[in-house]
Structures are given as structure tokens and as C-alpha cells.
Image 1 (cartoon, rainbow over the protein chains, first blue to last red):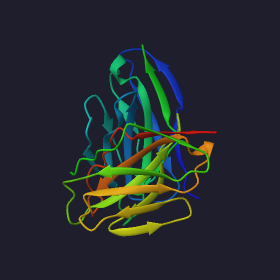
Image 2: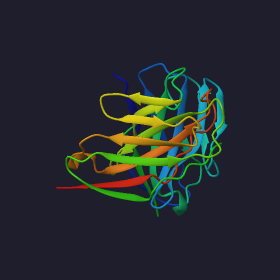
Image 3: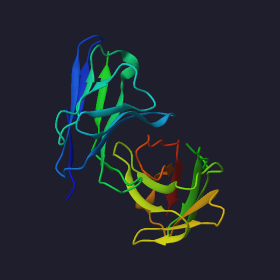
Image 4: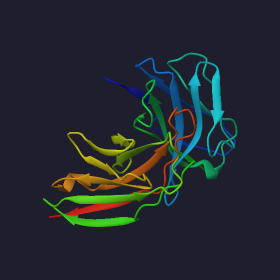
Length: 113
Length: 111
């Protein structure tokens, strides 16, 4: 069964303190993606990766970095978090040739004070 | 990318069939239509995906007319646990573009 594990699940931090939200999958899928969800704005894609060392911007990449050094992991990096990055974050994976069929992690709720 | 439009909210009662329609006037030839369900504070869950005509699985049916400018998600005999937000997405055939979620339809099922 597909598993997408995000850590931490909950985090309260302060402005400017660098943090990383990890995402790990057990399915060896090439495609991984990060979304943020905010009330009234729905889900918005931050970054996605089609394979190792291949990443691309989504709709709202500002203030975020990602890396894909290995297929299993796709960490989301906030170099200098700000309060407007307070949000619920989801990591998602997709198997090859699956079109729009994503499998999401359980989410990471981040609060930046 | 084709923009999608769906109702903000819908109400239903247990045991009824619910149909949620999504319009996507600018859908391209290779695009697929995908639907997700999301409960509060959980990640969206894939429900169904189709290209044309009708697709059915154990959870729902998806109806797509010949012009593909709209699609309808049909949930048979809903229960209280079907209360959730439902998202319609149009996905480029290769799937390698951004997958953009709209604001979804909040379905409230009452006893």
C-alpha cells in the first residue's frame, strides 16, 4: 500500500528560522509534489518533481525551495519563513502514466509567528 | 490549462443520488478529467478519472458528454460520511504539468 510520510505533522516556529518539512514515499514513484492549502484559496501547488534532480515551480513557489536527490524523498525547505507561510502543507506522489491520480500524505500544519 | 468551474456548495440527504457538475470549456484534446474528495485536515483522495463518455468504479460514476466541456460526478445513495469537499481537475494528458485544484464543492449530507 502506498505511503507518503510527512514530518513534522505540526510545527510552530518563528519568522526567519529555517525549517524543512520532509516527505518520503515507499512506492518508488517518479513524480512528487508539494501543495499548500489555505482557507478560501483551496489547494495550490508549490513545486513538483518529475524525477531525481528534476524539479519545477508550481503556482506559488515564492519563499520555498525543494530538492530531489533521491527518488524516495522530496523535502520542502523554508529558508526564512514568514507568517504568510502559515498553512497546511501536503506532499503528493503519482505513479507513471496515472494522469491526475495523486496520492497525498496526511499533511503538515505549519504556523509561523 | 483549462479552468474549471463548480458550484461552491451543495446540500443533500442520506440515500439520495448527488450529481456535481464541473465546467471546463477550454479543455484540450489530450486532457483528462479527475475528481478528488477531501475531508477536513486530510489530504485529498482520488475518486475517479475519465476522458470521455462514462466511467464507473465502486465509489462513483463520471459522465462526460461528447464535447467534453463539462463533466458530472455522480455519487449514488450518499451517506453522512460523504460530507466533504469535492474537486474537479483537468489534467494535461502527459500529466507533467502542474495539477491545479480549484476551490471545490462543499457537499453537506444531512440525515
